[in-house]
Figure 1: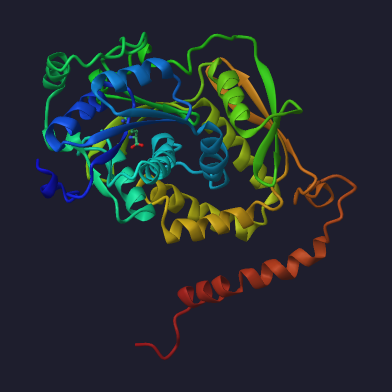
Figure 2: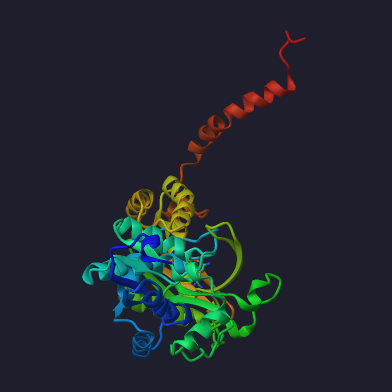
Length: 412
Ligand code: ARG
């Protein structure tokens, strides 16, 4: 592909979202060879773990002019994961949007780096079949419509074997195979969880092999309780110990994951029209969403709770579809934020091997009123109010029903 046909004829510098893996390492060299540009490799740390020095060395060995590593873990936790938590965001009712949440963070930093280095375009290593290309490109276009976007992997159409061969020919060093999964799976991980795709998982009938799991390996058998404290919808402490957002997410993930809980195995609808079998490990995000929505049951007024429940799937769908930076998502954020004013209190989670569930909740702002709810002598509910209320509530149905059994006389 020529520079002109990519629509970025005026650039000498391209900022590439760099993961350190095979595809983005090959992309570094491919951009240099095919488009005659300087490549700035940008790796954004959203909690995926890894050896950043080795990654930097690999980017430079592949030919990058420079490599920038950005620590965005706190930002990922406070601005992205916690925003999703307020919306109890689960795509298709199950998936807590792990990858979908990190793409806008990464895009934001790509754009900032593009400005810093005077780049005319950003590039990413996504294929044409996934959601991540959609999220990167829509986010970048929302933030910087003037920048070009290049997707080398989508252009070159190399198989994995061909990419490996290209790497060998160009002396591009590759990362040592990861202990778990090796080369078999495509993995994307951040603070909110871990997504595992490819290999045997592509057959939806095949049970996931145990070696796909890293965050939810059962290690503890002794049951334990964890108390999560929330303030205005956000978790602030575990067992009364205050923790900043990132540490709190990591700690909940670690505790709950050690009971082997937090796995998902699902067939999901991608934005690009493909159904895919996905395996996820989301111990922290799923536990926090469970605790948070339980506390909402105690503190949200009924109409607000019901309307919020209707909007939550929409929020999740927008973010899944790459519309983090969009007017509807922004407006829904305001709604979600406003709904959280009274969502403060504690939730007790019970952890047992393979299980995690809520066993109690309390809040200074609870709408639960014991004197109204109780059936014992302290009852303050005015029972006589119920009689007239129920009669009026059912009046319409009663009138309709009577009409069914006794047809009007002048009929027929
Ligand atoms: N299907 C999930 C999503 O669209 C996970 C994507 C994982 N990405 C990856 N490159 N393995 O959010």
